[in-house]
Structure formats: C-alpha cells, structure tokens
Length: 330
Image 1 (cartoon, rainbow, N blue to C red):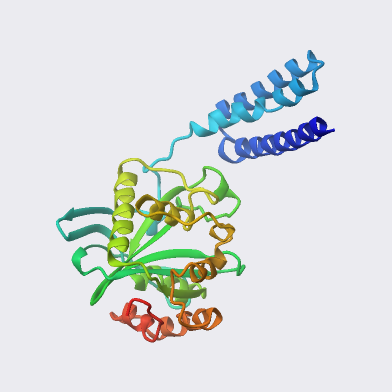
Image 2 (cartoon, rainbow, N blue to C red):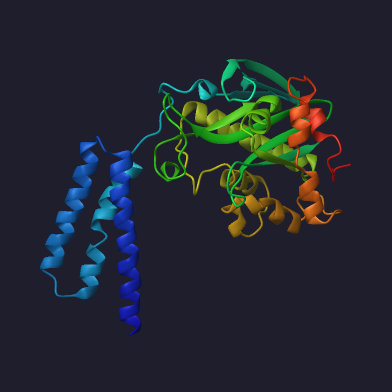
C-alpha cells in the first residue's frame, strides 16, 4: 500500500514535470530544433524502455526521461546583453567604489507624460554618494492588481543626499511585455534598475496608478551598507555576464533575500516571501519595520500615493514622499 502510494506520488510529479517540459519547449524553444530533438528523444527513449519492462518502478522512473532531456537543453540556454532593448532598460548600470566614494553610471532619471507611461525625456546620469553618510535602507511595496502580490524596491537613505533606489526587474526587448507566466521560463534577462525615485517610484504612483507603500526599516547603517555592496557587486557582474530572471527563484523579492543572506544571518523561509504582498506583515512580525504603531495603522500611514502625486515634477520628490512617515531609525 505504502509503495503503491509512493509510486502514485512519483507518477504525479513526473506528469507535472513532463507538462513543464512541453511548456518549456513551446515557450523557450519553439524555433529551436535542439529543443524538439531533446523532447522527442526523451519520449522515444522512455517509451522503448517502458515497453520492455515489466517492473512498475522502472516504468515510473523512465517516465522522467523527457523531462531530463528537456531540462538539460533548457539549462544550456544562455542569457544575453546583446538584444534590441526597450529604452527604459537599454543601458546597464555600473558601480565604482573608491574609499567611501561611490559612483554609479547609467542611473535612470526618465520623465513621463501626464496620465501615461509614455517617455517624454530620457536621462541617464552618473551620480556620486558618500558611503559614510549612509543611514539605512527603505523598502517600497507597489501593488498593481492582487493584494497578495507586490513589486518591491530597495532604496538606500543617505540623509540629506538623494536616495539610491534599486528595482530588480525584467529586461524586456522591443515589442515585449511582462507576463507572469512567461516569467517562469527563460524569456527575460534580469535587470537592476538603478534610478532616481522620482522615476522608478513616481512612474508607479503617478502614471500607472499603483498603490505604493514605503517602509523605513530598522537596518543599521553597517548592515544597509553591506547589503548595498552586495547589490553593487551583482550589478557589476551582470554587466559582464547576464542572467535569467525567474518569477519564482530570481525575482524582485527573492533576490533581496538572496542579498541579505549573503551578508547577515537570515530568518527562516516564510511563504510570504513568495506571496510577497504580505511581506510588510512579515517584516512587522520580525521587527524589520516600525513596530511602535499597530500594523494596520503603520500600513495605512505608509501609503505615499497622495504625497507622490503632490510632489510630481518636484526636485524634492524623495523628501516630500517621506514627510510624516514613521521612522524607527530616528
């Protein structure tokens, strides 16, 4: 009975794995003869072995051949920096550090048409920050649909200097649009948007109409600096060797966790890292954000939509959207 149940679970797993194989070949390898060869070879090999075997265990085991053949092909697909990119991800940022002096090239500072995402002005800038002035790191959560899913943006607070905002996104080619389904396959390279907050935050609050909340975190300057340096190392690495985005394993939130775990002892995994619309709730429980207020009140006060719309076009955008926000660092 137990053995039969285990074989049933294995059979279900292999069925799902082979469904993924078909989807991977169709989505990532529709025009790739090697992809179809891998799939057909796996199917033929599995059928040939199963036909000659009387052992149920062996028949279940060989059912995974198509998946293994396709997986080997899929893992061989290489990301690229050489494509016809959309203008807002056209340039790769690069960082250089000399002592406490941080210089980042290709910081995005675009302007958009009122009421739309149409780009009216493209600005790629070089900016300098003093790492000794770093006070902490803030977290944006932007909701565009389901309250269970959010886009997260980290932004480093340098006191009186402009913040350094980094948004981990997909690098889309001309004519492409983001798809949650395609994000699970090898359709998009990962891209770190290093940007002025008026751009990367304002485009969401003022032009897309998203609900955006901003949380000041309790991270000490030394931890905030270590996380930032890990981000910058990845940014420079992607400049030389691109990588794939993945909606499950390499997205805006799981990658933040990846950077934090590189420099500090991490908390146990929690499902809200994937269902990240409740990441603020998790942060509250772990003391990563201001806990002096009840959570629902903190959440309500962290909504920056009205302040962002009032600050549209202002050179003081970042200060204005933070006015009145609970700040555990002060």
